[in-house]
Amino acid sequence: MTDGNGIEVRGLVREYKKGPRAVDGIDLTVEPGEIYGFLGPNGAGKSTTVHVLTTLLPPTAGTALVGGYDVVKDGPRIRGLIGVALQEAALDPLLTARDHLRLQATLQSVPKEQRSSRADELIHRVGLVEAADRKVQGYSGGMKRRLDLALALVHTPRILFLDEPTTGLDPQSRTDIWNEVALMRREAGVTVFLTTQYLEEADVLADRVGIIDAGKIVAEGTPAELKAEIGRPSVHAIPRTEDDRPKIAEFLARFGEPLASTRDVAVRLGDGLGLTDIVRAVDADGVDIADLELHAPTLDDVFLAKTGRTLEGAAEEAEEAQQEKRK
Amino acid sequence: MSYWNVVSAVAWRTLKNALTNPQILLPTMMFPLFFFTAFAGGLSQVSQVPGFDFPPGYTAFQFVFVLLQSAAFGGVFTGFGVARDFEGGFAKRLMLAAPRRSGIVAGYALAAFVRWVLVAVMLTVIAFAVGMNVGGGAVDLVGLFTLAALVNLCGFFWAGGIAMRFRTIQAAPLMQMPVFLILFFAPVYVPLELLDGWIEGVASVNPVTYLLETGRGFVAGDAPHIAGAFAIAIGLGLFFWVWAFRGLRNAEAAGA
Image (cartoon, rainbow over all chains, first blue to last red; front, top):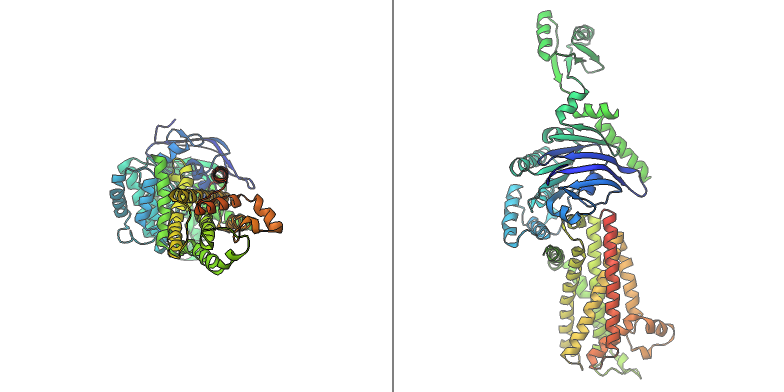
């Protein structure tokens, strides 16, 4: 059982009336002060899980405690201690950023005398000083995301839910959001439940990752644990000419299990072997190779190992399924 | 305290949008004004019809109808805003932040009331400016405006209940049409006694007829069935209040 800043979920199910189970009996625990990355393709059940945990949607079955409170019985208490930035920023195009912050601070019962200073502080923090008094309808996607994040922080929440906070953002805006999330955890000890379909995002930010596919959690652990679980790194050699390929393949086979690749010649490294062993052997044997690369396992490899599909492929499948449903 | 914070925040935001965006406020102001000008001005000779007995005159006769109509439609227009908030996703922000979500409905209702007060003040000033006679005293006028305020709440709770069930602005005709019908199936242009045929039958069982007659009675200084009219207004208000809160529960179950 977690203390006041954690999340504990047991057997959580959310079923829609005319659809399959969006969330199908998941269990997860998020420790206080942890950044938990919830990774999965579109339609995997990430957002539905967030909607249930933030009391926006009642669960069909199972239990979920957020900050020690039950999502079904203690909705008002939970809403007082969480901050939420949903996938689609829920903003009023006719209000300014400052109006939004004032509204949110009042809704969250921030003391009246602190509302203005808190708004100023957050406007500075998310870099919206110049746009603060402009209507949101003229904001870019990145500005809306940053405002949404600021709104989630108005009442200094103990637990923060970020539902795909960087989807559709340019690399600079994405990095800004990552820095902000890392800062919040470091300085305020906020627990962060972050959903994402970006492997890099989960890898960079999350202490632990839960991978969800078709409503079920298929893997959970630290990014390093998950990668270690599925295997060792691979080495990829790029031949100078096509004619060199058989010779290089024969050479590399001494260091591990060959992998199928059309671009290069690759092997999964054997136990206790590293790139340096190969480099030394290349020098010693005088093998002519254009380039040599070490590939560490990625979370996509983990997803592939657990579901038999790549994350990108799963996203396409989900998209196709949705289009089929629309027909 | 947190309940009042939610109420005031929702009302503030709705009013801020209404007061700073003419496209939201103008229809609420212009429609009653148009009806008042058209009915009281264009149809003033109706008061010459034999059997038309309303001493303060036709301007006052129409003023009461337009006041009640503006109250009802003020509530309905706020219901449109609720539907837009659900359709556009802004309602999720309110649902996620409000500790007690009933405060959201109360906040919209407060905004509907304040918006209508602005219209009612404008309408009253214009009515007096064009020479409206009033036979009743201050207490009668308080009675009239209280009755209209209850109609405003009924209008909002009805439309808000629809908005939270359908969560799309496409439900606007469903919010507006029944209110329009019930208002115009009352004795709008002449007293009930001068109506005939099926319209007389419908008007005599229409609860709005009682509100209208009592309202006109307040202006004339001789209000009939006051207790009955307030009982109807409060009863409808309570009924639609339950309707609206059940709509909120419906929206909660659907994930807003």
